[in-house]
Length: 362
Image (tube, rainbow, N blue to C red; front, side):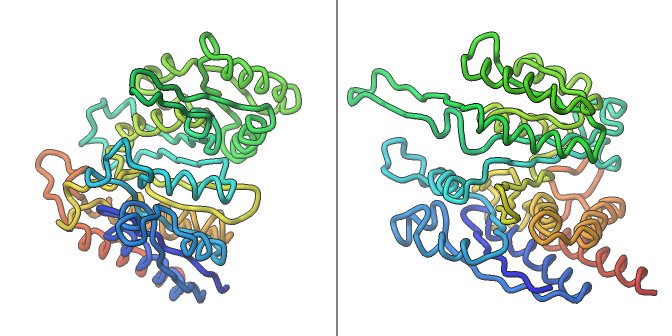
């Protein structure tokens, strides 16, 4: 097949990991007989520096003309000015809003070979495979904001409607049908009116989807239970801010933020794919960034936007094989293991991908 992919390298380590992601997609295309074309565009802090706009019109156009987008990371101390008219993160929020990408899929799967480096007991991590689905275009991040001129008070409004909640819940329910048929809906219904609306909407959908077990959890309790008994969760769905926080917390299960991919999806097949880690400016340019989150995001791109499930699985298996052979960047290396850099890690994944495809051909 032919596909067009727009690359948004962004800031910090973004360009380094996106280069790896492109190489992996190129390798998949060659091995499976596809034709992928790539186009780069600006976003975030670099875009502010170059064109004074965190999401330039040219970037929007490049994304509109693509089948999918692979994004690195945005932001950094250079642009941490709370009074600035434009900020790198604003470009990312605007991108999601423009394309109506309301569902953010964040899988958290524990690789058994990495449990030795986890701060949690290995037995707690056995079989952990959670799919977080975060509502992405509502809540406090998109509600009305106000800060008084004297800086003495400010507010952010958390707003949700039934249709907004229902559509992301249906994504979660459909995902659960292909997994363990269990959904945990996370809210703060004992305090927040928006969460009570969220919970009422969940309860209404329970009647329509009796084949799926759906439970409620309060966000503070869930944050603890996810660490105590992570293996009991299957699909977890929650609102925007809670999802942002909880998925960062879940990185302790996988070993590092660098391990986790994500897909931001709307009604169609178009999506924006990105690792959930930040721009990590402290290690940018040192060649030590973990590219796993980006490689696995590229696999999600293959699966969800291009409908190439076999290719996605091959790339995911190649990551697992590289890890089995001892590939470790510094963030996932256990005591006694020697960390390697981004380029060597990527080459081990690429070698595993090539070997796997060759063995299938033979």
